[in-house]
Length: 177
Image (cartoon, rainbow, N blue to C red; front, side, top):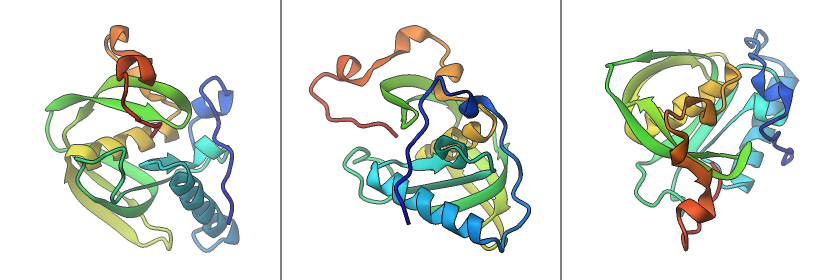
């Protein structure tokens, strides 16, 4: 169990597509998931992708319980999602403010599908299939983008809606996602 260093935007490893997990019974996968959970929780994140800690595997985790950074967000159960496939449930998209542990101190207005289905596997290799919307859908899309080498600033439509958190939201204590 360890809190790992999070790679920052500019590190070329964040731009590489991640490889699918093939061995769900490995000690390495179990340790990776524990380290990801510890890192995400220590940094008050809503999610974390394995590439953010330098591991090029298709593993993401996410969770929103009672987080002061997201006081109005619906609860998102702790989820380990391996080898994910996302399917939008409609063409409706909505812009929302996002931050990222790999892009510290900044926020941007990012368009995302409001509803989607995600499929993949849990930590034990059991199938996972959920249809979600709202903040839950946004978090999943953000984290899965990391597996494709995409950081949220690459999705911003208008760079006037991208900047330092303390400048965009003076007086608020927002942290990175």
